[in-house]
Length: 225
Image (cartoon, rainbow, N blue to C red; front, side):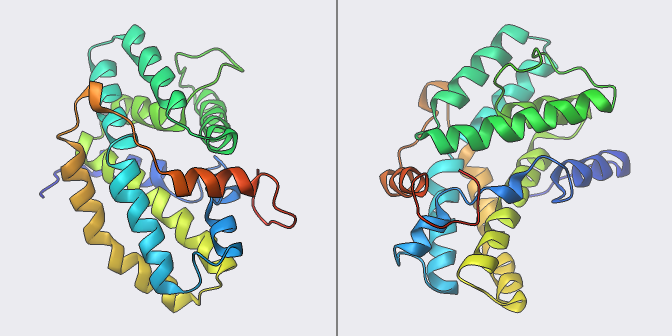
């Protein structure tokens, strides 16, 4: 897969995908903390499997297609479609915690964009999916669809590996090995997501939903619920 981009759009992509972007992704484990508590994830190998399953069976059929459709809608100036895609994105979150992850990060990104003199098409306090808003600003900043997709995947992957580093725990070298191991999966997932039509968007991962729901009542936890 070849991706071409200008220096300016590349820098914008790095800014949007950076773990230092103040949207709070680091505060959520997205079910991983309970999976470790339950013994489903216990080492680097099982961590890789947990993350790879979400990439292949959730982000590939939900987040990435929504990003693609939203970027197309923004390019056409179709705000009605953007808001419809936002509703679909939020409806795809299977637990209250996963819904909170998406909307809390979306709200933080919207607040940041307003401070950067961008005006996202949502009212203050209106629920907005981080993925949809990521797509909106990526289109505004003239980042290509494929580059934006890889940026979104990389940002999500870094947050998951960072969470695993604290929770499993993993060493820093193991964390870097995980990132290297999973990089080819990102390209594969992006290619697969391009085949998903709008009426096919969505996924169901019962284990992830169960882990997320049980994390809400987990006795001790480091990550937000």
